[in-house]
Image 1 (cartoon, rainbow, N blue to C red):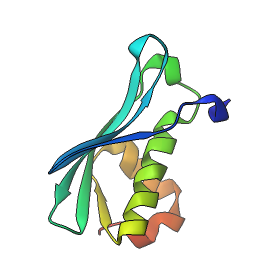
Image 2 (image 1 turned 60 degrees about the vertical axis):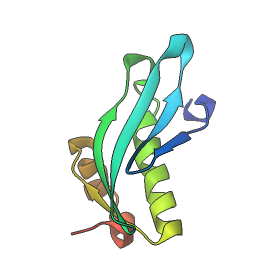
Image 3 (image 1 turned 30 degrees about the vertical axis):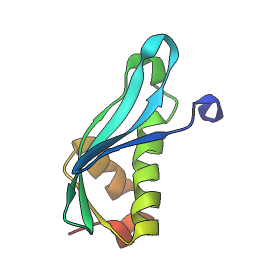
Length: 99
């Protein structure tokens, strides 16, 4: 069912931004971040409405941030409890985790 989710969008607003999935009726699953300099970003919030529950939407948002950080040579500080839990579950992401 996760393959039916829409593409993840990136909104970059200078020092802040978000990854989002748009769903039916205007619902949005989002993960917000703040940039810290040129080489780090803080994932500060993840919110997944009920319409997305059970579809892996939150994990997809964090995974996309990991992919983008890896490609750009950046590190992630996962302050958001959900993102932090995902980093603990995915040791293969350790290369982008800022300790």
